[in-house]
Length: 295
Length: 295
Image (tube, rainbow over all chains, first blue to last red; front, side, top):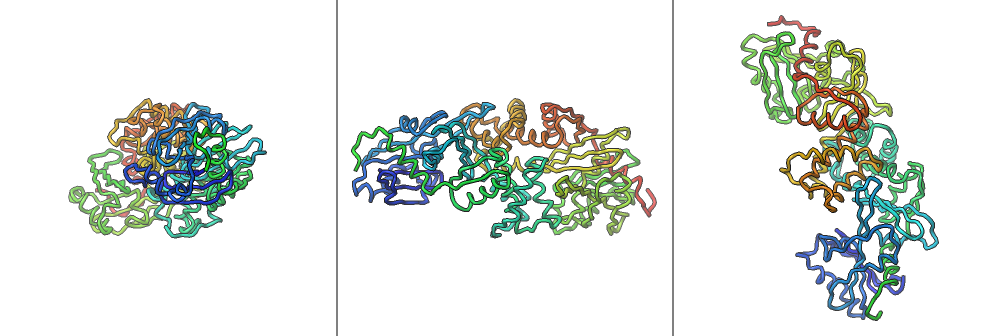
């Protein structure tokens, strides 16, 4: 089987035999980069060698199933287990192989506000130890996701606009004037930002402190971006899961920062094994109602 | 006397006789708009008719006393009363009149992070009823200020980056994609945003809700900017002064929104009388050690 994790800015494909990754592919071919919505052609080109080698099943997940993607898949409501996802796969017309799409998930927060994810649900199931009990999972990013998993189901989740807020505040407010684009990460300033997030006054007040600490030379200019990052991640961690044991899924550097922030906020973090998306696609693929024969 | 409230983006001058405003001037001549730092010439040109008419004393306040302004005035520490400000005026060389500059104020929040204001201190004293006891004052804006006044002194204050965060989030994140630049304010959406700010989950989570409510057609696209505004102002009000009686200083439309938000958060608000800056400059001018004779 071929598993494809197709997001807004990235395209990752895996040639799978059971849960073993035989081959892999990462292209800068996020759905926003596919010219005129030629998704079929893009997929065809990307995995042509594997198709030529006999693969006949493709399972896709991620933003490719959104309104901006190839086909809009209705969200499946939480709680949802892998069997629920496998039972709700969307069949997508494709010439040279059978192509199925994993739907995203939706949930409602206690105040009735909807939540959505597309692709993270596959990574979460792929990252979980089959023996694991209740787990809090975090996928850091532009739109960080925090999910609560119990009895093999994603029960609920919440999204935090942390990464995107960081970029907007750094590049488009007075805070950025003190920052240097090429400054290396500053671990001490990051820690100070995280600790500051626990103080009263609220995030909007804490943000102004990034400027005043700089004005009063209490924070080096080269360190202010790291301080801002710590402040925002700290606010996210406090709101989402202070004190929990958190399973982190994602790229090394950002997960490392989240691990530090979680520890400073009184919790503990474990980094998920790599290839969570590939493992999740394999798991769901095992339960899918394929009509073609496996190669 | 001439009073000048000279900020980052605006220049307001008042011809005063005691506390009476005889004449006034508002120019788009904020310190960022003054070519090559020719502040002396700009002031000379702006108030030339009043100088020609015999005025010999000018008192300035605002960002004109910052590093980006004419002369950098050291901040005066809180607590500070009008007499403290009057005793710390900075003399600025100027040909045709005696020119004094009100210093800004600094304070330290409970966690040791510095706070600064330049110009708002004058508006606060100008807005206070001389008979008023302890007062919480709010000046809404790009960098909203909340001050606590007791026994005629500004005891402490805090700044919230609310207005600037709103602009950055609206124009430079995915939230803006749902917004229409020319949509009229939506009072109902603003209220919903304020009420949402009281829910758990934190601001970064609430921000993502602006998107999902739009995606699920639970918030009209034309209303999402007002919802975002309510969310941010609500977070500010909860952090700064939930439940207080607040004296609001500033322009009508924004103060109106803050008044609604404060009421929704369980407090009450009073709008300060107009010309707070002129009144404050007059008050401080009365206590200043002028060497020239009044005209």
